[in-house]
Amino acid sequence: MSGTRVLTFTAALITVIASAAAARSLVRSPVPADTTAAEPPAPAPGLEPGMRSADSIARRTIGRNPFRAHRSPAAIRFRPEAEMAPPPPSPPRPSLSVAGIVLGTDPAALIDGIPGTDGTRVLRIGESVAGYTVRSIDSTRVVVASRDTTYQLPVRNRHP
View 1 (cartoon, rainbow, N blue to C red):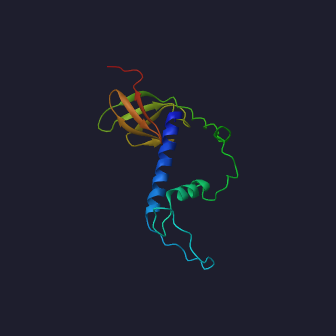
View 2 (cartoon, rainbow, N blue to C red; view 1 turned 90 degrees about the horizontal axis):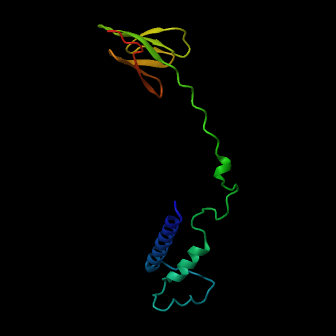
View 3 (cartoon, rainbow, N blue to C red; view 1 turned 90 degrees about the vertical axis):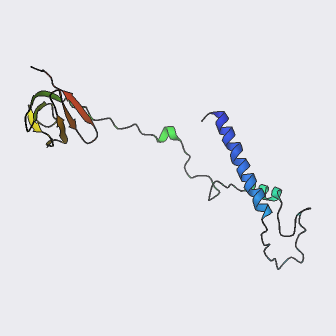
């Protein structure tokens, strides 16, 4: 956030807190009975007995830290630059390629470069090898999906 936005947000937050405190002061709240005091303190001028002034509520709110439940600093200071670990390296992208396609009632694709296998594998729609599943086969490309990536592989050498 820019400095202007931070100041605007802070001013709006203070306004909301002060408005809530002022509204709270207008609500009649019972004064707890004090058995040790002989006479309750006189209310502020213009207020009915049992009501508090907005100034006293604002002073109480500012005197306490309303944003920290325990009212004490955190045990460990927050330092985002020291806490961030570098992201893990992404796995190497496999060099998948389509050597050929066999069309017909049950199309198949000849796929090279599947990790963990040697040579060319013949796969049909729905078959999986090493976490790679063939989703579709047509005359120009094969769609292969892994856990987090979908590859659209064109045919390497197309012959009429």
